[in-house]
Length: 378
Image 1 (cartoon, rainbow, N blue to C red):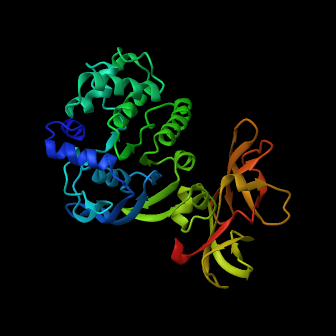
Image 2: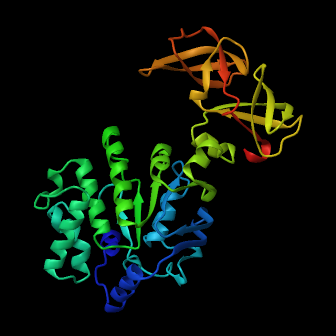
Image 3: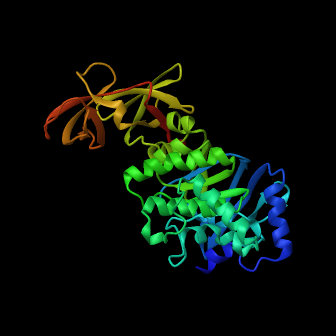
């Protein structure tokens, strides 16, 4: 709670208030992370992060648990100190400033609303701590609630609202201070699937309407793909790849990034042919072709990766591998199953009919969508 109070600016000096106002009203053009690092004893949670974020961008920090994405966000917010490198807003270094001196808006995973305060008072809390006049607080708080489509809910307590509504209040509270940067730490993880879809659209709408800069932490690739202008994939405290959603979805540069972007099928073997950017790998008793991701030569060890929906039950012609079905699930318009290849590799596949467990099947692989990685891109 102490960190939360600091983040909303309690005991703000006149100099700090002036600095915040200058940040909000200045020609803020970019945020730069310059070799940003954070260690906990002998453990390096962040290892020299370099990243430049332009004004107005929606950036998603994506990666599995423990990759450092929330640590990075908390360092930017000032809730964690850095142990190396710097954080810059244009030509101003800010990593030595306290959270309240940075003037950023923060949306927490667990909402972090004050249960004894009304919705309107929760939204206006940061403004109150900044010494804004009461009438102005009410005007701006009501405008923020209108922006998140919670008109008429201001007199309720947070406990009287649904989870999705509480998250909207948390977003209103973050944006009412008109911050130069909005930070969101997995804000949808506590919501059910339907609410997550609805809130995704709301978050992007609010971002577009405000023209703010947003950094959004998530482990959900669908959230990142649907929300972000650019996705930053992290692994073990480092930035693994940065790119537009379609770039990371279609052409992840590394095998681990591909796996996180949905390429769950991986067959490792040796390259037996190369032609025009396509590579054929002999693996699991089959010859499979895909797009080369980097330089590969005949004889190299390589891994072919493919998404489940690009591996389908086939008649055995073309780019195909034999397998034994293990499980099958009905998903409405299609079936999704798991099978075991000759070398024991598990394969996820899609089918138009139910397949009996234990049945021998042939799985076709879309060569244009399959990707082949050499040992150096594992």
